[in-house]
Image (cartoon, rainbow, N blue to C red; front, side, top):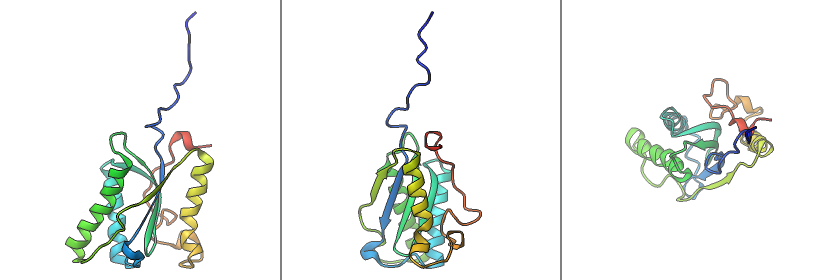
Length: 161
């Protein structure tokens, strides 16, 4: 009788879902503009469509964004965020003639540990516009994954209860 180890545990590089936050330069509120917020949203969706990452949840606030994302196996987290911030900055200068700094150089991240951690951050993202008094309910904020029709990816299988 042979040894059957059962399902293999996931390698650390496969368990790569992160909560990411990045703020605008000097926390200037440049993202409430429909044009700027929609451009950032298009950049997120374009890189998602190029399979640079899975986008699980997002919110674009006036001076920052929050994301729950899983970079593709061959894309380090830093590169995924660089795609988003750099791609958006390039497009803002080119398409909207935006001059000046857009982002703080760094970003913060938290590696999601389990389904409870994922759910905590998912709720935080969705409630951010409500807590900032931008809308009364999360579903009414157009630059969020809570908004009807937002294209997002389901949670990774290991993050589902």
